[in-house]
Length: 152
Image 1 (tube, rainbow, N blue to C red):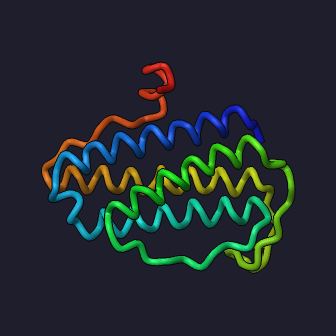
Image 2 (cartoon, helix red, strand yellow; image 1 turned 45 degrees about the vertical axis):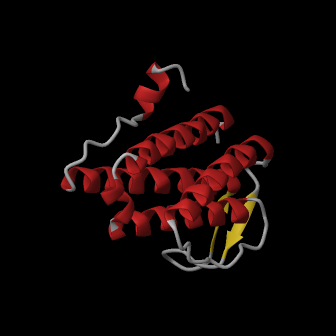
């Protein structure tokens, strides 16, 4: 697993999520939308859980996040923890997982971290589509936009 590319993807995620939060804060209706709120809570929980598993820790039970403030804080914390994990972990360390599409399996820690990032990207795209449905233009958050802006 290429650590530098994974770090760039994790850093891009921090920026892209922050851009989405700016849009959310700019339109109160978005912050009240059940689909967006549910997705954001899910992304924060899954990112943190996969990072914990990749770190070799027993993941904490998922908890319901009650407010957008809690969700935003949880996402920021999970994203920052992701950068730390990518920087510090042995990305090739094999982790045993209890279930997968064909039962128990093993995956390198780097693959689990990449999954967390790709999972967030997928749901960020869903939220962007939902913003459009609600009449709000989502911010441009493509990786190449982040790159062209100097990796802010």
